[in-house]
Amino acid sequence: MRLLDAVSLAVAVAFAAPAALFGVETLLAGDPTGWVFLGFAAGIIAFEQYVTMPTDVPILAAQKATDAVVEEPDDDNQ
Image 1 (tube, rainbow, N blue to C red):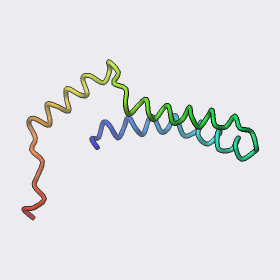
Image 2 (cartoon, rainbow, N blue to C red):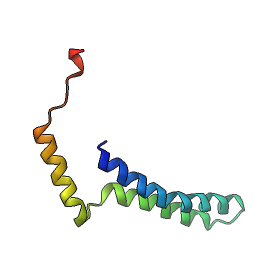
Image 3 (spheres, rainbow, N blue to C red):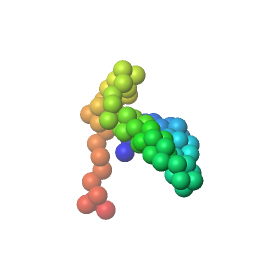
Image 4 (cartoon, one colour):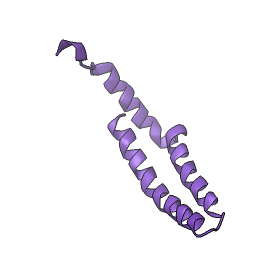
């Protein structure tokens, strides 16, 4: 996972965690509405992982440029 991907995932988790926690607490209290909050939290994470926004295009271009310039080291040569 690239650094920028990890940072954007961390931001998404920071927004999804309170909704998921509230959903779990609501379910444990016996209210089935907690599933809505758990679904909302899962939607936040899925949206971040699978939808490309216009602001992501420069990041994708930078990642492709670094992949073209930088070679991954071989693990067999150790």
